[in-house]
Length: 259
Image (tube, rainbow, N blue to C red):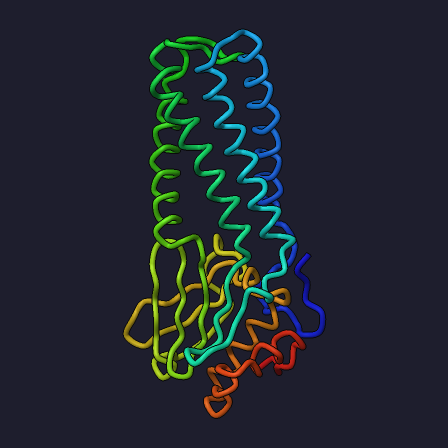
């Protein structure tokens, strides 16, 4: 599990699972059990369409749970590298893989529900026929969200990254890439909003902030990464370390002053 070993955690970071996060884990666990039971019963009844729908949702719930677990317990520093562009830190590729599997399951489950279950072509176990209006709208929303995420994941090849270069900072998620020259960054903080966990926030002159959520995904010692970013912002004379591996070595050894 990621933990702060030597350096202090940024004031607004939390290395514990929040109450909302714990509730979400319970929802995922319940969803896995419920949809798996529906799949088994549907197969016993010989209802292929119902089994396909419930099976898709089982994969979705399981994939999302695996994404959370991989994010929480992963060590990502080994996916970092240095070259002439700077130091690039990437999230554990298993996170993207689990998310992709979950999205595929959600697409299959929601599409089958809309096409078959809501049209009366099949019936899911443990549900009451004719009372699916709200569920249908939820499934339509899930289909749109999961398709959008899956397409973006494929287009980006699933690899978000944070790159610290000699002249600029670059952050990419599955939807877009943002860059800023170091000289345009007026502050680096650990506070975004109440919904963003453990962020690194770049305040950019005359531009929208660059927010890196869950920044502790990018390094085994997430707090060390935060202080690393601030160090190279404050000390441009040391940025040559970003291109030859010295910055990564300092990150692994947590050799940055909290300032």
